Every structure is written in C-alpha cells, then in structure tokens.
Length: 359
Figure 1 (spheres, helix red, strand yellow):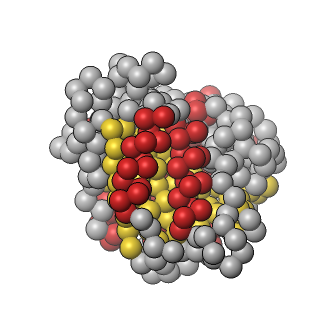
Figure 2 (cartoon, rainbow, N blue to C red; figure 1 turned 120 degrees about the horizontal axis):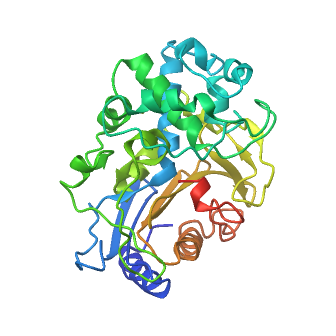
C-alpha cells in the first residue's frame, strides 16, 4: 500500500506533541521510495525548526555501522570473525589476560566477550583516542567467562573500532567515511562535532523539556555510539543491508542468529552480528536503538517486506512515541499484505535495559 504523505506529515507532529517530544525526524523506505518527514524544534531554547536534513545523534545504532565495517574487512579477506583480538592488537590487555587471549572479533560484535561494558573513558580528542582507550582497558574486569552469555557491551565496540583502525591504517571516523558513507553517498552522516555543526543539529532535552548542559559524548566511545545523521541517511544504511553488493556481498550474514538473549522480552530474542533480532507476526525484524544525552533513535529493517524505518527524537517520552508511530505506520503500509497487518511492534530496547547500558 502506498504511504499517505500528507497524513504522515501531520501525524508525526501530532504524536510528537502528545509525547512532549521537542523535535523528531522520520524516514522510511517502502514500495521503492524513500519518505522523509520532520516535526518540532531542534532546541526549545532557540526554536530552530527540525528539517528533513537536520542531524540527530543516533547513539548505539552506530554499533551496526561498526559491525558492518568489520564485516567488509572480513569479506576482503583481511580478517575473520574468529580472529583473536590480540592477533590484530597485540597490546590488548584485560584484568584477566586469559580472557583477553580468548576473545575473538565475533565476541565483540555479539556482546558475548564478558568485558565490563560500561567503561565510558574520555581519552581525549586526538586521533589516538581509541588506542589510548584500549590501553586503559588493562584493568577491565570480566562479568562472565568469554562466550558464556550475552551482556550489552559498549567497550567491546570501542575495541572493535580500534581493530578497524589497525586494519585500515586510518582513524575509525575516516574509515567510516571511506567504507560506508562514500559508497552510499551519505552527505549528512558525521561523527565529529566540528563537522556536525555545519548542519542543523538537534540538542538533547531532559525530562522537563529543558536543553541538557552537555551536547555529546567523548570521542573515545565513537565506534559504540557517536554517529550523527539524518533519518534518511539512516534508512539508506538500512536499505544497504537488504541489497547484496550495496556494501556487503552478503549482508544477510549479519542477521543470522549468533546467541539467544537471556531476556527475550527486552526488545529482541537473539543477537546477530551487530543487530538485535526478533519476529513480528512470524516475520523477521532486525533493529537497533540508540540513546545519548537527551536524544533517542531507532532503526528497523523488515527483510521480508523490504521496509526500513528510522525514527530520531531529541527528548520527551521517546519510547511511547516511537511505539505508537511505528505501529500505526506498519498498519498502513502492510494492511492486506496476505497475513494481515502486523501487531504494533515493541520498541527495541524496552523492557528493562537502561539507557546508560545502551548508549
């Protein structure tokens, strides 16, 4: 079914107002066309309007981009998912060095390394920040033996970002542009504030609707959560995961289950390579969310329908907002699709995961 453009332009604004969301960006790919919408303001302090080319922080959705970068390197034969991290980073140390020696790249990308996931270390703004972060992990503790379970791990993706640097010979930020942004023609996807400020950029808001005092997180956690982008650029990235050859020769590999989640009610039943995996009415959905300081983002990819949806917001009751918005959107787009309309989706990351553990 075709999307009702006029309806979604007004409905986005209505739902944002009801959820006290200051500003929102929505984009989706359906039936061979991308649709973009914007509502509200970038900042309640300035009243600058959100436009379809405004940038929001996408937080931990960044992890899927980082995982894609490593998968590109595996397709090129430069590494494998089962390569020990110490083979690429001989300096890699943890509090338990036996664990450090056992960790493979696959463990980093599936949150099964057991490394303390909440090491939010600021190692400076220099191009050496990821190297210094990895050095600072020497005292990091193990929360469980390598590979024994799944626990959301920001630290693992920073380490993965440093692996990318070592294999490409450049910074993670530049490798992201070379490996993903340039091939996909993404002109509104950036990681560093000096690049983001060239565009209209959202600021986060607290629970009272006030602008938060800090705009961003340290550069050292970049591969875990520092991309800023438009909703349309996020959708373009999601579409690449439905199109063999757009980036990866076989993107479906990343949505193959690697581990069952301890709590299947927390937004997904399994984890793939970078992706959270679930089913809606018997159809696979791959997704990821992201939370930074007062901003929230969500990306859904529905392979069987060829639909991709991105929702970016800068405050308010973001989870309820995205739940209602995407539920209504799927009802419209896939009504009469053969198996009936899908149930309203649970928001990825809901059900107990705290934002501080997700980025």
